[in-house]
Image 1 (tube, rainbow, N blue to C red):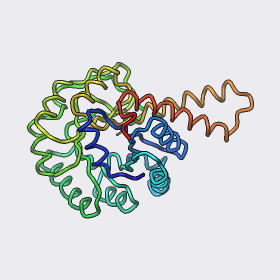
Image 2: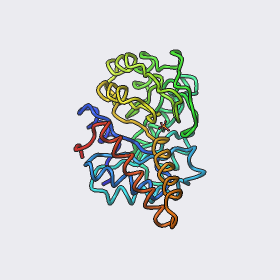
Image 3: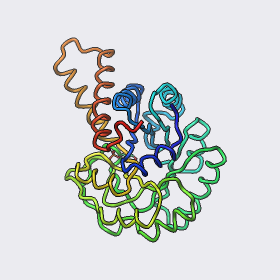
Amino acid sequence: MLVPFHKILNDAYAGHYAVGAFNCLSVEHVIGAIQAAEELRSPIILQLAEVQFPCAPIEMMAPVYLEAAAKATVPVAVHLDHGQSLETCVKAIKLGFNSVMFDGANLPFDENVSQTAQIVRIARAAGVDVEAELGKVGDTGFGGEGTGEATPDVFTDVEESAAFIEKTGVDALAIAIGNLHGRYVATPKLNIERLKEIAQRNNLPLVLHGGSGTSEEDFKSCIHNGISKINVATALQMAVTDAVRRYVTECPGANYIDMKEVITAATCESVKQHILLFESDGKA
Ligand code: 13P
């Protein structure tokens, strides 16, 4: 069932677990992710980032996401990830997404505040929730490689986070604590102290981007200290790529129909692993 993003996140916030938000680029991804959530009785967020539109057009993916959500026996939110403009957020809202992320993290603080606040006003009128970002999450492009190192000056500032939340009225805030999009060459060490400070200063679900490659220890520290949503893209792509490679290498009769099942199964397995790590199983 399609359930408001804020409801899914507020439940996670109150229950000290995190809901996985998985970037799904195909029908197989969507079916596998929903299957995992249903098997483990977990809420789930299906999301698509603007940079992914060229390979997974939002106009085509929106009906797939929405149909999967409507049919699912667990709570599902359909979310725009990293919207880069007001126009993209409005497009997602018109297509039926029930939450949007506006990513103004590279803008000066005041500009990020004013653009985010404008999107919150428009989204509210449509009954849609908003996630925003403050601080710099490193970027190798959901599938690229990063060093796992971040310099402290890119971390989200505690006082700025409070001012930002108050001025914009967002439902969730993505923070930077040494996390990075894409594939790390070294496992990152997240700044859990900064997370605790931000969580103590605010009363709102926080979001961790760049979930792929994070250590189990850091995941656990995150979800027990205020992170209520964790984004995962690269790990899903890697799981599917490995499974397809194995299938075509080892199976002489490899064919497209069976390969689609391999993709669905690999997605399901990877999503299940993340759900168990994030402790959202049994919470649907
Ligand atoms: P990863 O590709 O590192 O999992 O990051 C995904 C993400 O944060 C999407 O917004």
